[in-house]
Image (cartoon, rainbow, N blue to C red; front, side):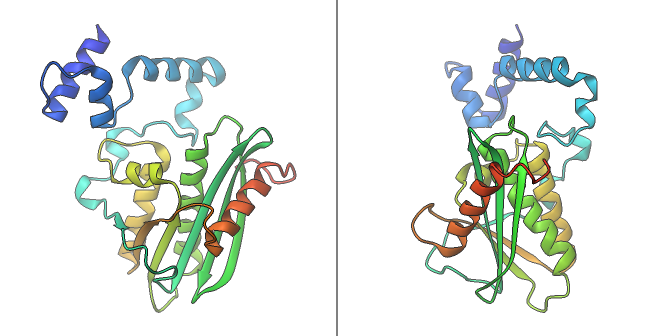
Amino acid sequence: MLTRVQRLINIKIAKAYRMVSNEALCIITGLNPIHIKIKETAELYIGIGNSYKKLQIDHDKPPKQCLHPADRTIVIDTDNTQEDPTHVNVYTDGSKSEQGVGAGIVITRTGITTVEMMYRMNTRCTNNQAEAFAILKALEYIHTKLDNEVDKVTTVHTDSMTTLESLNNMYKHTFLTEEIRRIVQEMGSRGWTTRFRWTKAHVGTTGNGLADKLAKEASSKIEIPIS
């Protein structure tokens, strides 16, 4: 019954024909199948109780806490001809293995590496969540530590196309996605222009390679507290 209701809603959103399957509609609309969402909520509730809604895990934010679509100023740069197109560049990566989950961040200014950061995450986190977490932490650092820069233009380089697509998907409202949108808007109000750029992994890009190394190191470094 619930699947049928979701399918009717998906048809309205996607403006699709009625013969389209619900699985295809969920892909088009970017919404999770409702039976998977119910299972996820049940497992979270059984695991940590109703308090999970208060935790900063990657659950969906309620609509009243999400940015208005007009305020989502996400700019994805498709020009990959320049490695360092802006004064401040951010390289982020995530890593998930048997050892754990980690996030790595490299921030360069005028081509010189000035900041390296590592975060270890809960083993329940996915690689995509680690990628998004790294972007969020990097932007928070720029917003708080580099606000006195004269040239307030930064480019975030990531090899996670999934994260970039989520930021551009108006139907995605997970905690990390909305927090990235929020920090980009706050930086914009302070004069920052934030661009996002997809970069191919493991092709020799210096910043990306270092971020990958930091993420893998963080995933297995037990002395790093879990974020």
